[in-house]
Length: 109
Image (tube, rainbow, N blue to C red; front, side):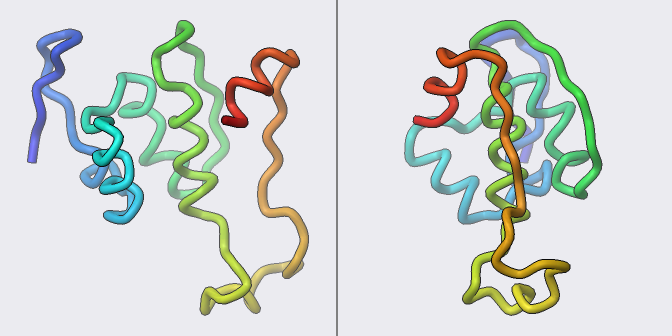
């Protein structure tokens, strides 16, 4: 399935096509987030593989979801089958660092 972006008129892939789990893509759709922003389109498939990356984009262009979706999708909960295979079960699996208090508040909600 391909969507046309109302922002640029270009053809964009869907979140599911980028490798986002259906449950996460459906949750995004329930809050009317259906078309990935360019930063998300460029980074999600890479980040979902566990590859480190650095991205830069203007304010309001979707950076929080660009890193938040992979963190959510790759995190393993104690009831998940792969939990015991973690290198250090029970230890943090992700660390999000924000350079300012304002940004920390923004990305935490």
